[in-house]
Length: 227
Image (tube, rainbow, N blue to C red; front, side, top):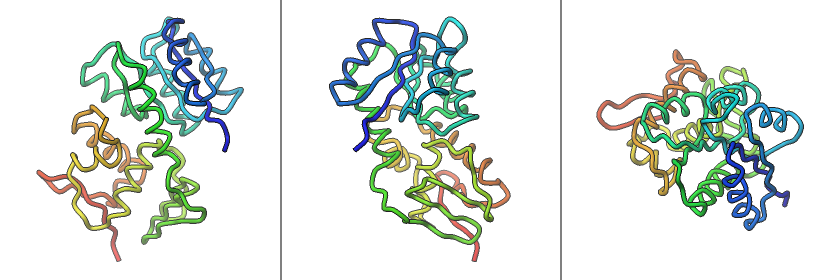
């Protein structure tokens, strides 16, 4: 099994070293960057399995880095932020972040979130397993989605997980609470608008006119396709 490679981006050297210590205890390989510029350079030079990204850095905030990363790759991203305001979190999710941790945080909690996100990004995959629907195909092992034969290249890992969960239960109405539990996990401390934000992004990328995901007002969402 290949070693998992994590890039930690924060301008506080002590925090980076603490996170490195805990992740290395789990057998992961950790690289560090103190600025957004360094982070983008490292991402161009090497392959990483997950990015831990501080929102506030001297040469530009993490939102800018997150946006740049999302234009190039589907790397899972965990945001670090000292601010817990709802709009900050929702903006991060709209730009493609998959999870967030508010400072100060427990290193053990961060490690748990890293492991959970990595597990969901790659767990339970069988080579060649696919879901096929009229106008939509989901290659589970390859984490590839096609709409009318066109590859959807800009799905974030969490958007893919969300689509996969709904598509595995066609016609079933899933509450926001159920989606948070199954896609984000029991230990995710987000609110229900997190689901709405990801659904909105997913619809835009799949093509809103296709209507793969239906809103059931007052309840949640369901996946359905035409004959």
